[in-house]
Amino acid sequence: QVQLVESGGGSVQPGGSLRLSCTTSGFILAYHALGWFRQVPGKEREFVGTIAWSVGATDYADSVKGRFTISKDNAKNTMYLQMNSLKPEDTAVYYCAAKPGPWSIDVERYIYWGQGTQVTVSS
Image 1 (cartoon, one colour):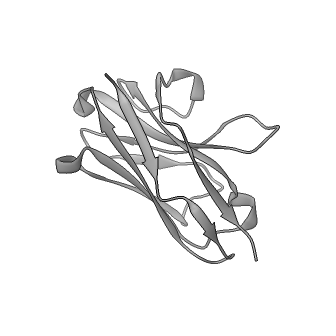
Image 2: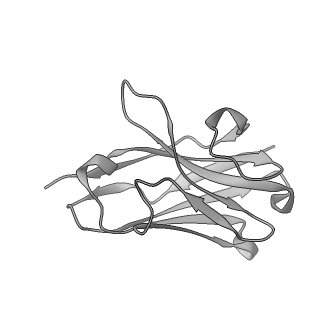
């Protein structure tokens, strides 16, 4: 059974940091790309970043480049999203997702999803 479980969300002041985790099970990570997406009420889910698990290459949305970093722990089957210099506009529910094959920024290409974790950036 495929599972992706996010954790690490919470509330933080502008300029602060959070680290999200996505723990996976039930599929072979080496054959997949993982991604982070976020969504606010009334808007479409948007791409944040992605990692090609086997080679570790990453790509990010322009809005988070230089502030967010994706990393992985092969032994724990876990992906991380380190978020620094957080802004109020980063407030959203953050989801991790997985797709077979190469990475993609297209939300429709991801077939496995976690339940999401809330991130709130506010003073």
